[in-house]
Structures are given as C-alpha cells and as structure tokens.
Image 1 (tube, rainbow, N blue to C red):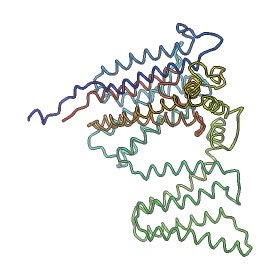
Image 2: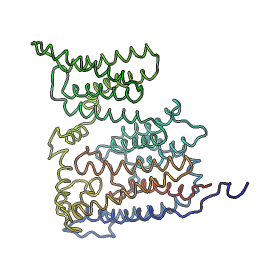
Image 3: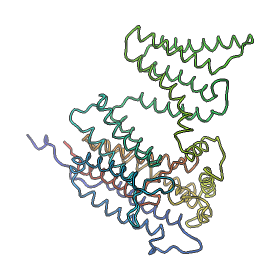
Image 4: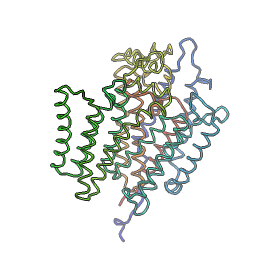
Length: 485
C-alpha cells in the first residue's frame, strides 16, 4: 500500500483562532466580573480572595492550566473511557443529591472546604463524550429502536437527577444535545413534535384564565392548531393531497354546522366544537389505517392523540409539578403578570441597565445600575447587562458577534472531522454553547423565563468555567489529532 493510500495522523496545530477567541473571552469576562463586583466605596483588592474578581482570576489561571493538560492527553483516552466518565458523572449527581446542602433552593453543590463544585456542569462534556462513543460503535444505526432508547437514555438520565436537585436550567441545557441527533439523522418530524409541544404549553398556559365554555381560550386555540399541525404532518409523510383536503374539509364542515346552529339561536360551546372537529379527524385517520394498513397512519394518530393528551396535562404540570418560583417566572416571561418586586425584578432592573447604556455605553466602571447593585446576580447569570450598560449597544453587539464567530468556527471544525466520534462530540460542544448563549441573552432582555444559566466564559464561577474549558479543549484535542487520507 502506498503512502498516499494509507491513513496517517495529522500533526497540525491546535486551532489557533478558537484558542485566541477563548483567551479573548476570558479577558473580557474577567473585566466584566470586575466591573460587576466593583464597589464604588471600597476599592477591590486583587490580592483578597474574598473578592469575586480575585477568585475569578484564580479560576481563569486554573482553567488555562487545565486547557494545557487536556491538549496533552491522547485522544484514545477520551474514546476508551467515555462510558466510565458517564458512570462516574451519574454517581456524582446521585451523591450530590444526597449530601449537598440546600443553597438558593437547590441541592447541586458539593462543598469541599472553601471550594464549591457543581458536578452538573461537568456532565455537559461527559454526555457529549458518551454520545460520541455510542455513535462511533460498529454498525450503529440511530433509527433502530434499541439505539434510540440508548441514546435518549444517555441524555435524559442526567436530566432526571438534575431536576431532582432543583436545577431546571442545567437540565434544559442537557436537552440541547437533541440537536446532535438531528445532525446524525434523526427525522425532522421529531423536531416538529418538540416545537409543537412548546407551542401547546405556551398557549395553554398564557390563555388559561379566559374561559369560552368547557375549555379555556388557550385550549380552544391549541385544539385548532393540533388539527392544522396534524394536517401538515400528513402532507409531509403521507403525501396524498386528497387526504389533506378531506381532513381540512371535515374540520371546516364541523365549524360551519355549529355556526349554522348558533345562527338560529342554539347556544354553542366552541371548545366542544373544536374537540369534535379533532375527534372527527382522528376517526378519519383511523379509517385510513384500516383501509390501507400503513404504519404512517398510526404515527399520525399518535401525534394527534398525543397532542391532545399533552395539552390536557399542561395545567397539571404547571400547577402541580413546577415549583412556585418557576411558575411565576414563566408567567412574567409570558406577560401574564407584572411582578416588578418579585420574580420580575431581575429582568426589570436588567432592562433598565441595558437601556441606560445607550449606543456607546457609560464607560468602564461607570454603570450606575450595576455599581449601585440594583441588578441581582449581575456578575453571574445577568452579567450581560453589565456589558450593555458600560459598553452600550456597540459593545454588546461586538460581544454577540464574537460569539457568533465562535459558534460558526466550532461548526466548521465539527464538519471537518472525518471520524464519527470527533464529529458527534463537536456538535455536542456547538449545541451546549449555542443553547447557553440564546437562553442567557434571552432571559436578560426579558424574552425568555429566568432559568439561571451562565453566559459562557463571562459569568463568575469556577465550576462553569472549568466545565466549558473541558468541553472546548477536549474537542480541540480531537481536532488536532484528526486523521486524513
């Protein structure tokens, strides 16, 4: 075999552009933590470990050493022990749930003397490694039932333990790994189902107080959407126009008949009418299944019936499963309540800080909202408002553009991997960073509920910074040692 046909190790350098952006984020992040924790009455000493800016320097220094060490570990180590890491991570989540003290309403921190660590942060890179290992197994096919079950279990098991720790935000981050599955062949219909579920939940909750008979306005709107979404699914997967037209015709006919009766004086419950329309569509799909004996009609039936069951469960989940502070945050985000003294205080003060920054900002250490400590958690979850107040629209936009370049670079690195392990892990990294960025910025500007997740490399905290460093530099090590023909 000639040298050209043999597989050889690429001895290229670590991707310098990504490392440069990482270092830049660390510098900008520390400046932001320093500004957010700055006390206008007492100067911050960089030698006082009780100061957050000083401790953040310690975390940055240890993260740089950690990054260097990760680049020296052979890539085979990550692939060989991926499942071992996963089992250890699950064990630590269980231990944390049992022994961790309650801090700010959650039991997610292991206290080791003066140091507090959050094992849930390290599960991000561990889940990514486990998924990469599974996908790289010989003859692995995602759409086989046993493989789907294994893949979803790897993601959802940590979600369960973290939810039990009352860390809903971190649990939602784990769900971002579902994006990896779509990159690796999961049908887009499943993504459509997930998006539909979110729409059902939001509409069912937001308009739950307005009754139009037996059902609320939210339920009525959602019942109509279920019919339309089911029709879209049939259009995409059955691909028979006459079936689509019949489904729409049945639904319209039910409403027209009801309207006729209302016109002659009969009192109509439009929620019941929508339910009858949906039931008629379901019966029609059931008829088509018995007529043609095709499995696709079973999936359409499952979607329609499952959507209705999910809709009717939203009120129970909202009122009996979610905790009071979580319910209030959702209500504030959906505009159902204006709680400026309670759950909405964080977002209200954050908006004031961001708006007061104007176009060019007030200048470094000159932000009045943050210096006077009006914004809670301004050096952790809400650190972006410090950036926007002091650097203005221009500075905040530059940070977001840098993040965009960072995400796109990671996508490029993921696509150039020619091993399944490297590609899947790379997209796991992309998913986590993208989710953190969208949710954190969204909650700071008030368009998403406050769920308490940090802005990568900017928010104060050792566990999150170490976790992001693990996540990124394992991938950079894999990229450095990728193989080429």
